[in-house]
Image (tube, rainbow over the protein chains, first blue to last red):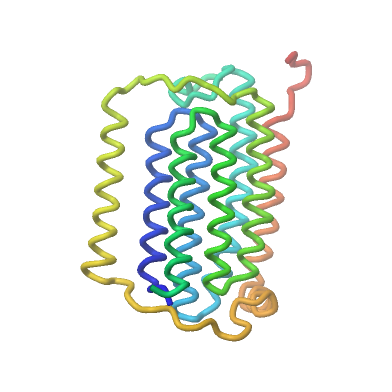
Length: 100
Length: 171
């Protein structure tokens, strides 16, 4: 069987790629997708440890993380649509003023 | 090398490649589709780890609902191909260096200090089955489950209020 370390390492690599995406891309949609990737990497670590320690609570936490991700995406995309309506851009460098 | 290890390595390669593809695509639609493939790969990992319920939730919630919402918004805004202007030229190299530092630290912790070492045993019978998940969720985690429904309600109200046009607003 596969050592649990490999799963955690993969999870760390995916998380890092997500963090990199947040840092180097300026498109708000891509930044959101990178955040999803990071949440997913966290979920993978949760499930790997659940399997390793053979307690079910980690999988329940993954379930809750998924719910939070769904809520976050709904509100975040609504914000992006609202910003696009006023600024006609979703470049995060353009979102520098407090007034709409 | 066992079959499991080969399967893991191939899937890990696909997961990292699709994550990179998501990061580097100029077109947002391609990014979204790469991310769908990444979520599907992670769902297979969940199956390998004995979590069929989580794997199916992953496919239906992440790869299904969330990514459809993303694609819908990308097409709604017509934001497939937006230029990525470089305002801060030093930011990208710095981000890559910081990411490499993070990977190096994790590698050190996992493979030198061995903070999470050990081999996963054979799958237990009915471990992570929908029945076991349901029993735990509705007994031990009843209150968080109810709070989740309020969270989803608030998110729904928030999304509607944010995208609603003001009275008399022209657009």
